[in-house]
Image (tube, rainbow, N blue to C red; front, side, top):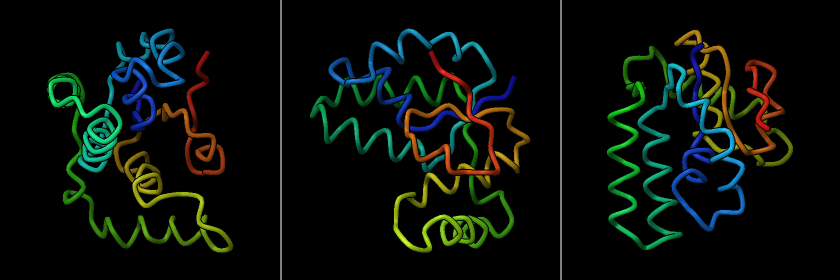
Length: 137
């Protein structure tokens, strides 16, 4: 099974005082699948973990874990990547801005890589018609 991991799940795995940490640990078996992330997801995880924890050793651990265990999608390999992401961004943010650009990028990556499921703790992902969310416990 091919899984695209959102930053919210990865951050919750590494950030012990995250309100979703226990839930992430309970669902960590998902990591035994073929897991994908993008450079944008790496950026989000590194930035948010650093800002929230101020712990560079933890950030380095998360970075090394991601690059060693997940397939990293290089967005520049995807033709018209930013234009396609912006079309999704525009579609879901017409009246209010509730989905970020990186969140919308996951729809494009999902399609490009023929992903089976997205794993995310962000409830806004339920708005995307183009993806299937993995049901977490």
